[in-house]
Amino acid sequence: MEQPKPNLVEDLTIKAEAPTTIEEYRNQYLYLADDFLSRPIDFCIETTSLKKVAIQLVLFSLDISCKYTEYNKTIKTETPLPFLKFAGFIQNSQFQFPEFVYECLTENNETHFQNQILEKLLSTYGVQPTASLDFDLFYRGYLPYQPSDSSDTIIYVAIDYNEFMKQMTQPLTQPLTQPQPQPQTQPIWAIVDELVFKKKVLEAQVDKKITEMMDRHPYMWNIIYNGDYMEYFPFSLYLVITNDEQTYESNSLPRTKTRESTTTIGRKIDNYSLVEEYGDRYCFTNAPLSIMENIVRYAVFTPKPKYILDNVVGGSITEDIYDNMPDSDKEVLEETLSENIAHSVIYFTEKTGNLTGKHIWGIKTHELFSIV
Image (cartoon, rainbow, N blue to C red):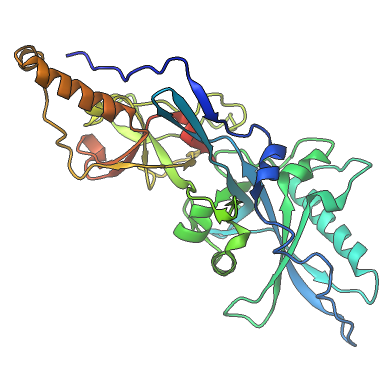
């Protein structure tokens, strides 16, 4: 039996469209704002013994590649789905932010502080500034935080990656777009789901000081729109693909390619257990199916999901059964299948091959996810 296709929407009225540039998002969304962070360098207090303090660089980027599109008859609504990601390193099986020790001066701490921050950024990411560099354009401020297991304060300095790169004369020689970081040398992006909730990036534990700081200061990772926190944020998931042996594995990239040079973001699969009812889907797991080099993590949004408690949606309808059904039953079946296929997100337990027993997110459109 041929699968019914969802009704096509004609003569669309666009009710809302997502912003298209970082500048447009910055005008509408509030994140890591100056209102929440300190800017004057007032943690340096003149004493007979000059104060030393640990500085950690929180290099963040706003990703605007995702959106949620809904159709209601002839009305199309696009909901922007921006999310924040943070740069760090995996060292000794632990995800950490770049850190250095700052030694307070008796005077001119403002200039000295800026110079030290800039020097660390340039040496860490291998970039060169323009002659007209303006520190205030990418410096958002800092958060002094004392971890629960220490008497020493850490200064977390927030740096806007998008603004920072506008003032650089060359791309990063330490790119943040490689599939798999080289321990202690390769920076890597991480998203909120990993830093705050899973507390794990790939196989590395997140430095508990980072998780604790973000947990106690949610303005360091929340995005505010119209005076309230955004309803959705993405999960860190792994895309399922079918290999040559017709078994399932997590998606990875060739060693010679970076995420920036790879145009495809994955492909749908058509051989999972619910494909007849819900159509081809991008399928994601919470954990990788196997540990491999160059494995790819995805930031995946799951708005308004349909949770399927079992995999029996109506049984398998053969062509003979369908031909002998009353027309009224055929209409009900086709309407049900059409509605199922139209669902943007489904969540179910798979019963096929080496995916048996795995919880799966089935995503209809690539607009809902992005490579981290």
